Amino acid sequence: GLPARVTIWEVGPRDGLQNEKSVVPVEVKLEFLDRLAGAGLTTLEATSFVHPKWVPQLADAEQLLAGLDRREGVRYPVLVPNERGLNRALDAGVSDIAIFASATETFAQRNLNSTLDEQFAMFEPVVTRARAEGLDVRGYLSMCFGDPWEGVVAAEQVVRAGQRLLDFGCSQLSLGDTIGVATTGQVTRLIETFGKSGVDVSTLAVHFHDTYGQALANTEAALRAGVSTVDSSAGGLGGCPYAESATGNLATEDLVWLLEGLGVEHGVDLGKLVDTSVWMAERLGRPSPSRVVNALAG
Ligand code: HMG
Ligand code: MG
Image (cartoon, rainbow, N blue to C red):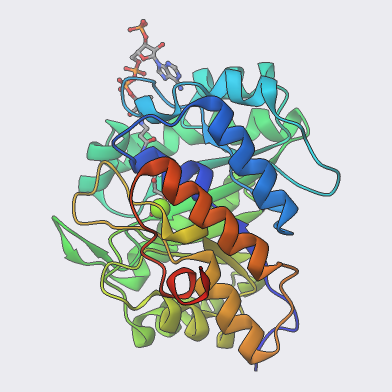
């Protein structure tokens, strides 16, 4: 069956803007976040405390959080790769962080400058200390279905890596199709493999990029397999600078349209969200790739 309600984890301000060629001014980012909250989204992944040379688009993380008008009932998680990042996030007063590991060796090297094993050694003390400070920690796992260098990724390999992040103390595990190659059968099988390994499927979230146009179908497969948290980005912004073939995330508008049709609660005002994505597309100087934005805008 389907869940009665889905939590949308909006990643546009982070996953979307990290991949834009131009650096978006901090005032525009702040207005974007405020508009997203105004459209009813309650989890807004705001930015990353990564190395500014690796992701210059998000080098203004401190300024952004200092200027953020936090709305009641809205969470503003940020990405943190290491202890240095955690210190920065704590100084900025965050209460939710996300670490981001890779299911494959090659992407761990490309994205984190570490081996598969080294990344766990980097993340474990981050999760432990963040929890001790009272923060909530999400674990991301990238390349859960396919990897541009290693090809198809085995479900068992993904479950092993994901299990480690949950054992560290992550409250949720987001399964990333970083390059958007997954298809529905693979999604169902991966979630079932987690379930058979003793992982409570309700702790899983899904994170689809839409490179091959499968993100929406994959989302429905995940919902039917027991998942009820879905990552998406307003207007379909996004990609990943360290995975060349990746394009934008599943568009939040496309997700909302699907949920609306299925009668699943989501809490979003679609009209306000479309207006926000049209406004953002003007700031970026290129149209939104979302089919729903284009159908409803105007
Ligand atoms: P490194 O260069 O190996 O770092 O980068 P290091 O530990 O060797 O340190 C080198 C210097 O960087 C030191 O400074 C550190 O202090 C500094 P120095 O002593 O030379 O002056 N440094 C930092 N400065 C600020 N903030 C920090 C930080 N850490 C070290 N946090 C590192 C290793 C992990 C930091 C780097 O590889 C990095 O920042 N990677 C992030 C890449 C990234 O953000 N990728 C995109 C997000 S993941 C994604 O999009 C996938 C996802 O959407 C899910 C999916 O789609 O699958 C989540
Ligand atoms: Mg992503």
